[in-house]
Length: 263
Image (cartoon, rainbow, N blue to C red; front, side, top):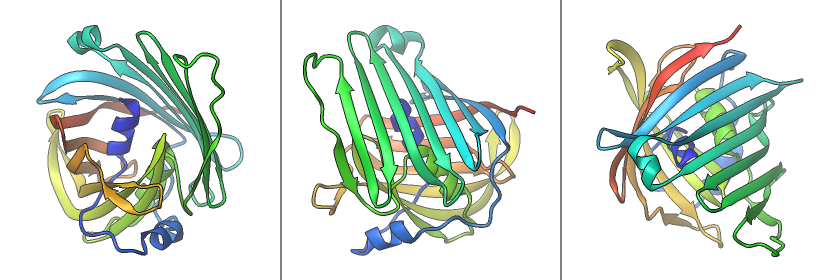
């Protein structure tokens, strides 16, 4: 759930992916937009059909040197939690130099088992180890994924928000949210206003498409994702205010419930 949510709010695009997508993803550099506030806290709610199903608390703060730490704590809520209990913790470290991902740990806690994924980003890709508590006695191996410019969700989000995001801009982001690789394709549709939490907010509207990166590094359609739209606040923070995505179960959403910068 946390992984799906964070992956959805990365930002977005539509259109055909050309054969040189690996070159474009590896070549993407930080844009001129300044970093976010040093200590940012936000809470998101998400669900489908207007029905809230989960919530997540997000914290982004400047670390030592030129690093940033991103943490997410969330889980299912309400009636949904009685049917499907899930809690998830996500901890990532990103370098401001190129908004390069350094490492992340994802822990998903279900009713009867837990999954822990640990990753280390290196030049040219990432190595990852995924451990499932149901597989007691096994010794999961480290797996290597070789794509230049590959980032975790936090690094990809920070890289995307640094771009000018002018109308018509497109981005290709190689993302490793855990377990496998994806290509997020981005197109900025334009500026508009969005009614958010009872007020009119200036936003940047984007469209999203996602492809699965296969074992042979070819792009294949994401079977569960169809299309998406994201409205990003058009201000100094540039946080997603609302995300609407068409997936195999229907329309799902994520919405910013509150945000504050802690001094």
